[in-house]
Image (cartoon, rainbow, N blue to C red; front, side, top):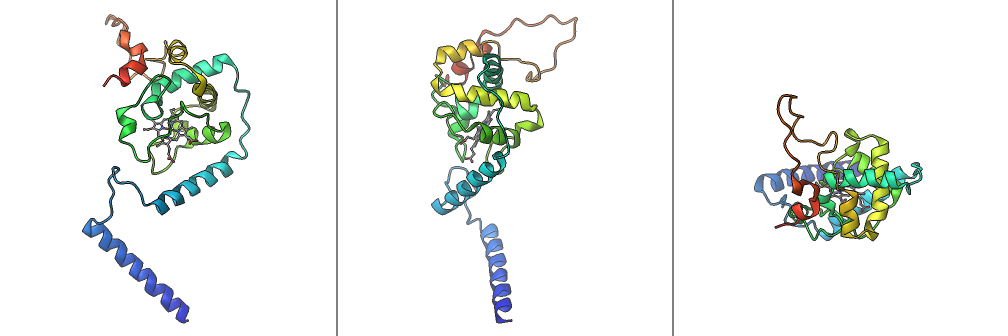
Amino acid sequence: MRFIYALVFWMIVAIIAYFVVAFTGTYQVGADVPHWGITRHAIDFLRDHTTERRAAEIKPPPLDDPALVKLGAEHYAEMCTGCHLAPGMGHSELRDGLYPQPPDLTRFAPDPAEAFWIIKHGLKMTAMPAWGATHDDHTIWAMVAYLQKQPRMSAAEYQSLTANASGMEGHEAVPAPAASVPMPAPVATAAAPVSASSAH
Ligand code: HEC
């Protein structure tokens, strides 16, 4: 019985402490103040073990097909470089301000099954979106296939692989103009996401 009283007492103390911290603004919610080391370790541990467990049942298809890699590169160029960089891209202003900072995926090839799960479902309380909401499994595997090659890719190879990427189907910000309106000439810089996003 005493144990129950003690438990209830400490739960009430914890709830009061929570509201005191919230109302006094003591907790640092700003993304420019890092977590305590122990909080960071707890989050990383939970993420690593959960994704490992979830990915265990996923069997990657063959990922070497050059057409699949190219499709993945084009999607990657359109949606991912601002956070995960690309060959030849030094940094991005978006990535510099994010916490947790997205990993630089030009430096290592993530495990295929885990990458598939993370790309499809995203990661809560990080900036990583769930791309499964808008992309089928084939397109997600294409991005995984590209990520396996990216760490060994030169900036020139990346540029030629993604030359047609901008304005891909489904990625236009603006709907296609009506037939009577002349199509604008393609913008030269749109095909060069690397120089465009790292320019300043
Ligand atoms: C707005 C930023 C943002 C965008 C855009 C984004 N990601 Fe992420 N992504 C993150 C963050 C942040 C993490 C790491 C979260 C963490 O630390 O737990 C992450 C993690 C990942 C990981 C896990 C890497 C590892 O350590 O194993 C993969 C793979 C990944 N993202 C792929 C992609 C792909 C592919 C795209 C584009 C379709 C994409 N991401 C777009 C922010 C982003």
